[in-house]
Image (cartoon, helix red, strand yellow):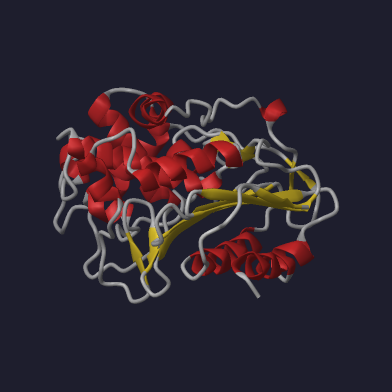
Amino acid sequence: MDYLDRIQSIVDTSRLRRRIGPTAGAVIAICIQAQYYYFYLGNGVTEFTAIEFGSVTKLFTAMLVAAAIVSHRLELESTLCSLLDLPSRQGDSIRISDLLTHTSGLPRLSLPWFKHFSNDPYAHYSELQLLSYIGKRGCVRPANQTYLYSNLGYAVLGATITHCYVWGYERLVQDQLCRSWGVPEITFSYPDGLLAPGFSRSGALATPWHWKAYAPCGALRGTASELMRVLGLITDRVGLSKDFYDLCDRPIDRRAIGTQIGFGWMFDARSNFRWHNGATGGHSTFVAISGRPKSYLSILCNQQLPAEVTDLGTALAGELNVTEPAQEGICEWI
């Protein structure tokens, strides 16, 4: 079995293929040593279909931090107390590196606001409410804090970056990242009407999500074609400085066994790739960059199936490291 047959077999036998609903679809975009391949599951989603990125947005937020470090606006060990002018309390203050690696001790969400999720859970939570919550809670990091995935942590990270620049989050993403890469289409201003209709896990029609303070966690929208262009520019280290890519290409927290964490990326040290996933009420995403040169992938799906998308993505990312170079150009399977 050659490398394309192995990839096709992984897609064909995936839980995503078995689970995806009759009205939903997914596109799997793979680059193997600078040659592109597209696989399609279900209906209605291609590399040109706009999808909500969900937590893949965190990669862009983390890269904004890298850009701010390179421009000397903050440091990895800068504390929230100093950056947001909050009063210090007894104990170690949360640092930028803690927020990036989900080791700040902040919970997943700023409860009790999110105790009862709505169909559009982040639409009404403002930055003022976020900063008020952090001011009351304080910026102390629990001793010996371990990994605790936190959307709240990345919302605070985004607020900290905008405080450093005195610009809004979307403008920062555009000015500091997307325009430098020549991909201004990635934005959270994509009109709802241009998005693929989203579906819940059960197959019910889902409402698009809208964002205020939590935008740095999941607000970006775009297509697989645009996302693959970004991944290609990252692997080629184009458009931004060497110092920027040197920061983004390495783990920050090296203590973890197996998965290590960097600037948004989860590093699978055993299989030699880095990845992140995402989901909203009706969409799911996955991206990965292989340790093999010019090899990366994305999966965009308009159904809330994050576990199935991630399972397929990690299986394909591991395969990228053992495949032989492609001999021909773009191939497509439907």
